[in-house]
Image (cartoon, rainbow over all chains, first blue to last red; front, side, top):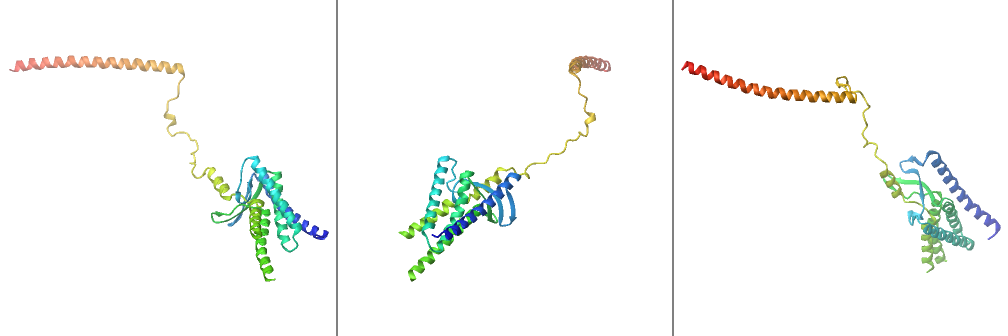
Length: 161
Length: 108
């Protein structure tokens, strides 16, 4: 990997990381001044601050410190694998992994600094609420969706060749 | 095999790296724990009762004791008077009965 590519890749990761940080800090600032966040945007979107101690979709939300540390170390290991894949991969899928890495680092920072991840985007249709998420989750989800499609398309291309 | 590993890895990424929280627990509990302000009855403001001036003015403890003694003595007197009335009424009945008999005898 050339130095130019490394700089581009790093800037993508840090761009996502900083967007996530700015939005989280903005919400935490509101929470401090107004003693909580409960902002109505439109009938489908609210901003509500929620601290997630577990992993995705509210799973493994334990109060025990050992379980929390185990999950955090697992996440660090997965991030390590992703960095290894980024280093190895040479096609366009690298950008999807970079998106995932940027979001993952954003959430990892909160896990280490606050011991929980602040989620604030509450998307809902009438009374049906989707899981509360943040900007990092958006990038991770986008990266995963793109990766799945890329795997399918990439596989087809290889088969055709 | 490689395909399955990739699939598992993508699932692991989705679950472990994202941190979307339980919306249901948060929102439902938050709303249930709070009291419903519409169920709380509004209290009327404090006002003076309409017949406040008719109510007797409370007395001191000494005065209350004296008044209680007075009440007791009044009750005793009333009882005595009743007893006397009862005796009187009996005696008057006897007298009236004697008079009737004497009149009836004279008429016969």
